[in-house]
Length: 543
Image 1 (cartoon, one colour):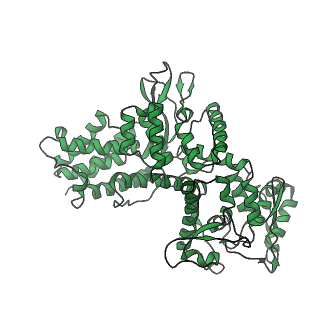
Image 2 (cartoon, one colour):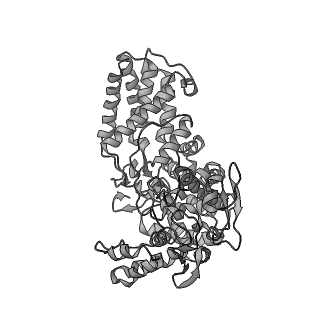
Image 3 (cartoon, helix red, strand yellow):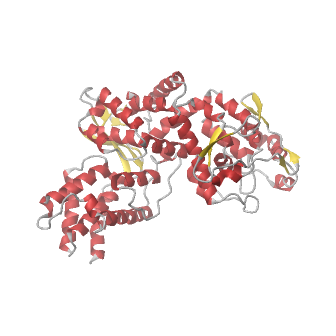
C-alpha cells in the first residue's frame, strides 16, 4: 500500500487547515461580522482530549502518542488552556494520535461499529454513505455541523487516496484523521452571532454555548442531545437552557466532570513529578500515590455530589474512603479488596480534607515534610490569596547546617526573623506547622529529630492546634466558600469582562450561602446565569 503518498495527502490538508491562521488559544478579538466571529479559543487539556475521544468512539479506542504539557495559569489548567498553543512537535504528536485513532475506528476489525452502510467507490463526492459518516463524526468532533467547505475537503481526501491506489476505507481513515488534527477539534473555539432579540448586540452561538456547558460540567464534548438542543435553538431560551442544565447535572457524567475540576484545583496533574526518598518512605509507591489521589477524589464526590453536603464541612469530615494500598500509610485496618469507609475517632489527630495523604505528600519534599509548602497551598487553593515568591538572594547555608538536630518549627523561626522572609513566612508557616504531625508522605508521628512536635498555629488572627484545629478554622473562614466560587467560575471559563465578572461573582456568592454551600446549586447557578454566556463589546470589537 502506498502509505507515504496517503500520508502526504493528509499533511497537505493539515497545512491548509493550520496555514490559514495562527492557532494559539486565548481571548480573541475580531471585527463583528454577521455571524461566527471568533471570541475565544481554549486548547483541549489532555483529560478533555481523552474523554472526548472515549465518548465519541468508545473507551476501547486507544490513544498512542505524547501530549504537549498542559499550561497552568492562575493555579488552574482550565484557565491556562486559554493561553496554550500547539508547537510543530506537538502537532506531529497530534497527527500520530489522529492516525492511530482513525486506524482503530476504520480498521477491518471494528469498522462495522462505526459505518452504518458500505461506502461506494464510483463517485466519492456524492456517495451517501461516505457523506453521512463524515458529517456524523465531523459534527461530534467539531461540536457543530461541518460547513459545506469542510465536508468537501474531507471528501477530496478520500478521492485522492483512491486515486493513489488505496481503497475507500483507507480514504476514510485519512479523512477522519484530518478531522482529529483540525484546530476545530483540538481547540474549543467560541464564536458569536448577532442577537436577533437585541439589534446591534452579540451572543454566543448555540453550539458555543453547548460546548462551554458540557466542558464545564462533564469535562468532555457535548452529547447528541445537547447538540440537538443547540441545533433547534433551545439553548437561547431560558426554559430550554434550564432543562439541559438539569439533565447534565443529573447525569452520572457529572462525577467525571467534578473529578476533573477538583483534580485541577488540587494540582493532581503534578503527582507524576513527586519523588520520595525510598529509604525514608518505603511505603510510597506509584500504586500508593494513585490510591492517595483516588481517596481524595472519592471523598469529594461522596461529600459534595452524593450527600450534597455543605462544602465547608469537608475540612472537618472524619470519614475517608480506604483501601488496602493505604492501610500502612494511615496505620488502620482495611478490607482485603475494594474501597471501604473508615471513620477516625475523636482521639485521632487526623480529620478533614487537609489530613489526607494526597495533599500532605504532594506538598512536601522528597525527604521531609514542608510546613511552608503546605501553608502556601492552603493560602492559594482554599483562600485564593497570592503569596509572593521568595527573594532570589536568600541564604540557606545556616538552615542546612542547622537542619540535622532542629525541628521544622525551629528552622522556620530563622526565616521569620529575617526581614526579607518574614512577611511571606508569617502567612504560610503558622498554617503548615499545624500539620507537622504528618511526615513527607502523610504518615502520623509525634516526634521530629527526637523532639516532641508542637502543632500550635494561627490563621488570620485565630489560634488553634493541629490538623483538626486548622480544619475547623478553615470551615468557619469567610474566604473559603468565596474562594471555591471564584475557582469554579474560572474553571468554567466565564466572561473576562471585569464588570460582568464582578456582578456574577457577587450574585453567586450570595446564592451559594443561601443554598447552605451546596456545590450542585453553585454549578446550576453558574450554568443558567445569563452573565455566564455574556459577550462584551469594546468600541466596535467583540471581546
